[in-house]
Length: 298
Image 1 (cartoon, rainbow, N blue to C red):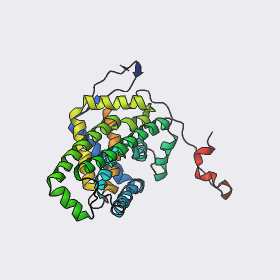
Image 2 (image 1 turned 45 degrees about the vertical axis):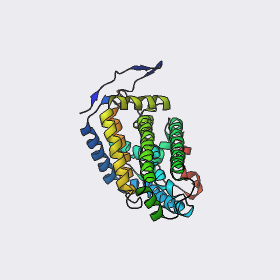
Image 3 (image 1 turned 135 degrees about the vertical axis):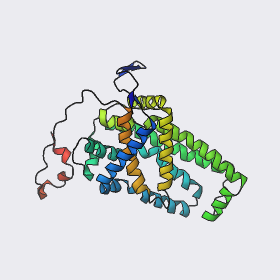
Image 4 (image 1 turned 60 degrees about the vertical axis):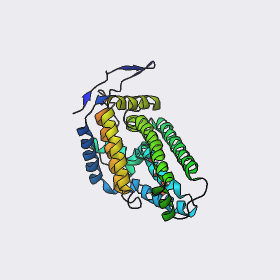
């Protein structure tokens, strides 16, 4: 059962924020996953469409790696999905948010995140995660070069033999996984509730990061368990050939929204949103403006 931890008003570095962090238990993680699965079952086509780019990208990366003899970067690239995943799941948060409010959730509704008042802040934090992803790839490449030199592995069996059956390969696995773990911890700490918070409460990037750090600080065991769950599910989804990510990623995305709901106290006085006018009939003369309906709103 989630319990409120922080005070309603918290002064952080001279900035007053009203985002109240709760203490949660391990059972709340299971409940978030269950609710995420329910969302996925309710809108499976939409979720798969939004996330199908991940399996496709994985296959493209697989082919690219083989073709350009940079096979050692295949695993770091796949593992790097955990760093940018919170940003890529924005559309899934919006779908879960709409379903939670009893609204119709269609595929194109995920694009409403582009109209969020805090979209600029969302892009800022997204850029930070992509920078973190780039640094991780560079670090992984440097670790491989320091271990095996600049000579590339010729084939997958050759690469697997070098990594799994030699002392240098074991050292590469230990050091690489250790460094990757540090990157994953940083990403988890700054983004576990940041993007849902910015989408839901229009927080700034700084306030969202601070709230996320507080959530991790006050719930170290559940957050460590959540990071482990995410890592295990991503590994399972990556086998074989990343196809399982078409299910794992949307479920995790929806579950992250529900985890945010458990970690952050809802706004006691939420602003009233104006109902959207019906779309009505569209005519050929409206093209191409009809592709961007929000441009016609006043």
